[in-house]
Image 1: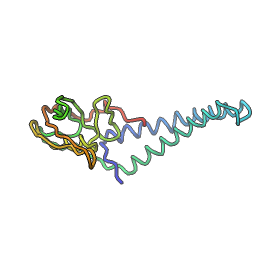
Image 2: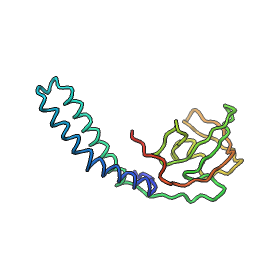
Image 3: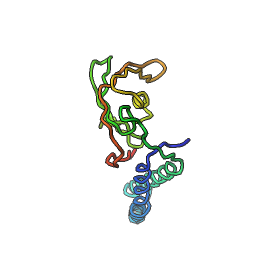
Image 4: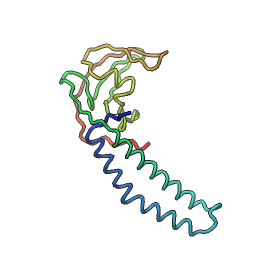
Length: 167
């Protein structure tokens, strides 16, 4: 399994990885050590909380290392009139009779509540390569799908302003 990421995705992950290894890991280890000194570990909430935070950090470090190791670098090569990565697209949803605007991003930066959808999500993958006026079908699962139409495309680029997901 390869993760399709932009060069900026990888750079942001490396920066977070450095922060977690160099700055956060020693702080969390010290918090565990201090909490352990409070006494009985079976009833020591501070110790359990410190261990939980340390373990979350270690888990995130492993996740980032794996994502970087398995990454395949991608770039947007879409034409000026077609939907590509980091473009903002206004879509008319026929079923709901309304318009929505989405920005197509990589999976590690998706945030639906902020209008950022993954290029691998049903809508994101259906949009890639479409032009203004194109009507298309979004297959959500084997039992459900819907029709939509591209109303506008605002070309974008990966300027690094979209943060990584923290999970």
